[in-house]
Length: 392
Ligand SMILES: Cc1ncc(COP(=O)(O)O)c(C=O)c1O
Image (cartoon, helix red, strand yellow):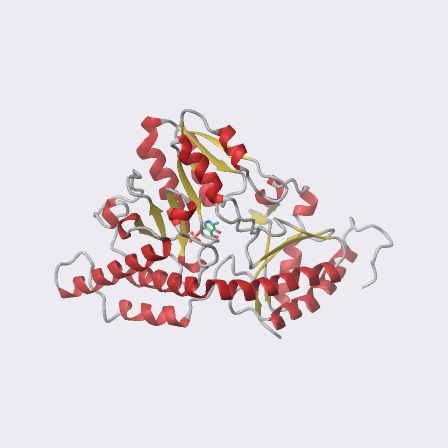
């Protein structure tokens, strides 16, 4: 049986070139970067170099980068750290209804601490507009957080335009760019953002390491207290191998970005066409063009997402559904619901995300395997209308 990995939005494998760069920092170069002797200076130099590489990729200065323990921590530091440090200026935040839980749950936590949060609704494609954001701004708004690209449906938000609205109003703007890492332009000047989060494992780097870009002059409270590492923004002995891996992976991804995007986009479009061709009542979720080159998210009527995943897994295919299984009850995706997709259709959603190692043969295999699975599940569904393609 073939093995086909189509869940690159969840995570990606570490590239061999990245692993090779990381390995010496587990054994040969093991010194604590805070130590003044040679062992410490060696690892300090590795972190400094990684910070410079990353800064060059983002178009910022090295001092504006804080390495974190991943994307969730970067989002928490941006939102919680900024809100706590700037609360004397106001206690209102704005975000969107389709953010990753690392943002939404941090905003909810801040509500418990006395902050007010506006969750902007999105249109049918998952977009918020600059006009909508402008209307939601209040005199006490201190921070706006809007994701660069959505992790479920791949919709790309108009970040430069949204950031400009905030710039004019003197409000800080954060973007969760975790799904955009290595895929979209991350130049913070072009984007006009004050803060930006990334996570290495989404662009062929290691898990458990990420970063927050914070523009010079952005005040942040630390989430982790202790030593003075990361200029006092994040205490704890640094994850040297992880940081080196992140920088190497980001640089490689950016070097190959256009070529990879073009190839992956071709496969993605082939996949979308194939699904529409071979399965009835399939709807593409997210924006038709303003979407990540590797993202396909479809709702397949009269089937249930989790059953699709289990059946695909039995055929060696890794995919994801829009619904999350929480404590035995199936909750439909908050992203699809916010886009106005009815519950019963949101439940039948399937996310297929391609990567740099995906091939036309992978797509072909999926297109052969999926239609009979859908037919089988529909035949068992009490909702599937009588007389319609019930024979399996
Ligand atoms: C948009 C987005 N933000 C944040 C995260 C969290 O990143 P991490 O897994 O590095 O904590 C993810 C991961 O799925 C994501 O897709």
